[in-house]
Length: 125
Image 1 (tube, rainbow, N blue to C red):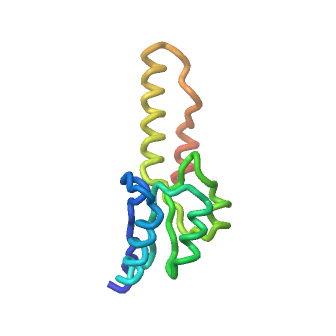
Image 2 (cartoon, rainbow, N blue to C red):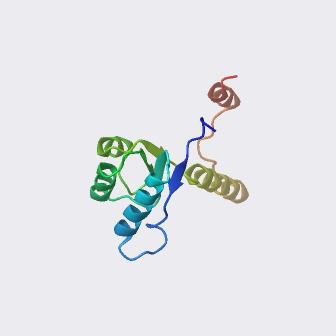
């Protein structure tokens, strides 16, 4: 399938691997040699390591954005080609739903909520 983009993933930084960088490098190299179009390293947030990995790759690097990690501008400056949010949007929506249900149950105020017109505008209708 010519249009297929294979973004190979290594979880070396999430699996508790001791010294995850050498394991990640080993896997990323294997994925590149196997023909991956891009490489994904979730759990990596150290700018120095990101820069080293980007420097050793011939395909784009994808990083999972983290609230405690580098921002989008810094990741772009490091050479990261793609940033994923993973489950962040789902978890944020879940937190908002739980907070809203708790506010309704306690009779407290509900946080800022977009009106129907704002929602329609967001969806383009």
